[in-house]
Amino acid sequence: MTKNQILFSVDNQTPFTLVPNPTTFSDWGDFAAGPTTVKPFQKGDGGHVMSSQSPFVGSAGIVGYSLNSKNGATVYIRLLASNPYLSVRDNWACVSLSSIDQGIDQDAYNHHYYNEPRHASMEFEGRTLNVSIYQRSLDGY
Image 1 (cartoon, helix red, strand yellow):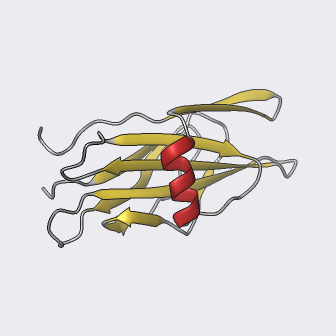
Image 2 (cartoon, one colour):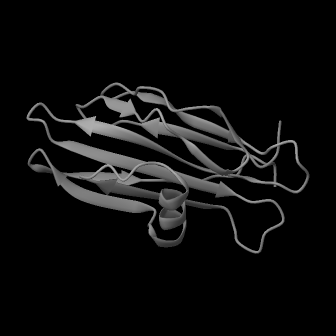
């Protein structure tokens, strides 16, 4: 198994389909697979980032989903994870929710990496939408 990889797993506990954003961004490494559609009350793959063949490189990336209501409202979900190689910073994961699509690129990655929490909430369809991200090591440490 390649070290310094990230597997995003998504557990959709809503009555809405999670539509993957076709754009992914890796700050380190490369996306081996992007996120897939996740149907209501199902689990799915949110993407796979692997360290590149270059020595001393970890993996880090950001993926996104849209959650669309029947009345036209949209929530944009962003998931970021970082699995550095030989870094003073530990593995990191964070999440955000927004009613505005802020894209998935270097700027979005930087903003999330330094500012976003592991849990986020916002009102959607008369209820509170809660999103959390959990991280476990796959590197065998």
